[in-house]
Image (cartoon, rainbow, N blue to C red; front, side, top):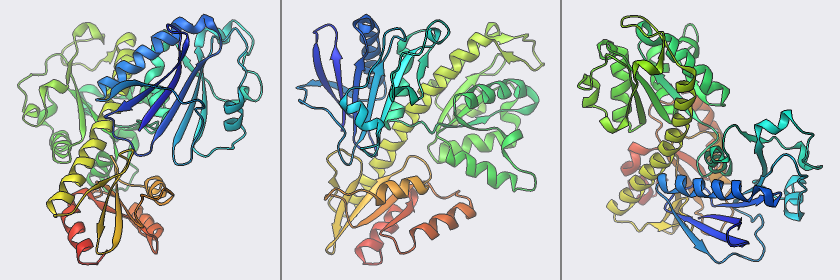
Length: 420
C-alpha cells in the first residue's frame, strides 16, 4: 500500500490519498508539506502532476480520511517531502527532527526548491535540516513527481539503461545520451566504455542486458544489418525487457526490428531534432531535444520497472495456482506466500536480477505474515559467475535464497516434495 498525506491548499486542510494498483516491494508512506503559503500554487501543481504520474504508471489515486498523526512505521518506507520557496525559513517539525536524528529505519527527508534561488538568496533551511541534499527543479515543480516516487521506493533511484546502437552510424549520439544520463545518476551500459579488456564480449553484453531496466535503441538506417544489434533486440524480446526505440531519419518503419518490437514503443526523430544532420554522416542531438529525451527516458524507465515488477508478480501468482497451491497475498502486495507440508514460503518478485539488496530486503522483514522460507524471484539466467558465487555464499545457511523466474515450476515441485 502507498499512502500520501498532504496539505490541500484549495480546501485548506490535510488530506490523505491511497495509491492502489501499483506493485511495490515494500509499503510506502509519503508526507508532503510546504514551508510557506506562497508555495500553495506550486503545491497544487505538484500534487496534480504526481496524481497524473501515478495514473500513467497504472495506479489509482483515492482520497481517504487522514490519520491524526502520520509518522514513520516499522516495516514501511517513509518519505518526508518539504516543498520550499528558498526565500522564507524552513524549520523541521517534530517528525522531521525524529527522522533527521535517525530515530526511524527506512525514513528520509527530502527538501525541494527552485534552482534559481541558490544564486539569489541566502540558505533558508535551518539546522539540522540544512545538512540534507536538496532536490532542485529548473522550470517547474512538476519535474519533481518522478523523483518523489523514486526516492520513496515506489520506483527506484537505481536507474539502469542499456544503449543499443550502430557504432558506424550513431556513436556521437550514443555518447551524448551516455553522458547526459550518467550525470543524472543512471547506470548506463555503452559497449565502448563498459566492457573491460580481456572480457568475453558476448557474455558481458548479455549479462548487462539482463541487468538493466530498459534498452534505448538508436534505430539508424543500417541498424538491422548488424548481427550484434539484432541479437540485442532478440534478447530483449525473449526476456521481456523494456525497450524504447528512437527512430532516426532514413530508418524504415518496416525494418526487420519491428518483427520483435511494438511500433508503439517508437519515437520518430526529425532532421530538425539533430545537429548538423546530413545523410550518411554522424551527428548529435540538438541540446533542447537531448534534454527532452532524457526526461522522457526517465519516465519510460520508471514505467518499465513498474510493468516488469507486475509481470513477474503475475508469473509467480500463475505458477502457484497452476501447481494447485493457494496463493496468500501480503496486505501491501509486496510478496506472495503459500503453505506446503506445514512450511510457510514467501516469494518476493524482483524486476531485475536479484542482488544483495533484494536478499537483505527479503530476509529483514519482521512482520508475522512473512514465511520462514523466503525466495527472491528474478531473471538470473545470464548472471555473471562471480556475482552468482557471491550470492550463493551469502544465502548459504540462510532462510533466504533466490531463483530464476523461468524455473518456477521446478521450484514449486521441489517445495511440494520437501526439497526446499
